[in-house]
Length: 177
Image (cartoon, rainbow, N blue to C red; front, side, top):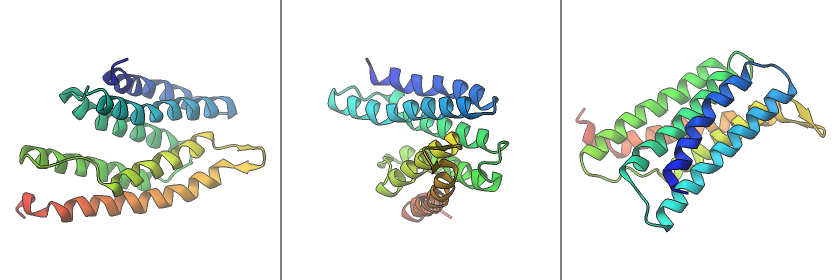
């Protein structure tokens, strides 16, 4: 399977997650978490497979990070009306993602490396790590998944803002401000 198919599958999972989040209750929450997790895992595999098999494409370079941002943003937005995450936290996270995406476009136009930083990879990991238990939300086997997600979202927020600031500091000369 071509890595770009995995990217498209990640995008296709978004409406499924959104639809599931319209239904309150344990089953829909659990299924949305499973769907999100499966989609998030494809991010690792499509990049790994593309590099290993020499199948890196311009489509993949653009759509892979976009698919990640769409998936994470959709999940965060759908958590707001359920009261599982603060709207202002989601605003800061999505705002950072848009700002850094714009900056990465400026970096690319200047023929510089736009690959994600290590800090950016941790940011993504903690965002996904927060979303999954927040989607699960309910207690299973004595584990309070909402509480776990609530703690992880604060770590994700700090890493999100830190990595965003890091990008802008690192590439401030390109912004000419």
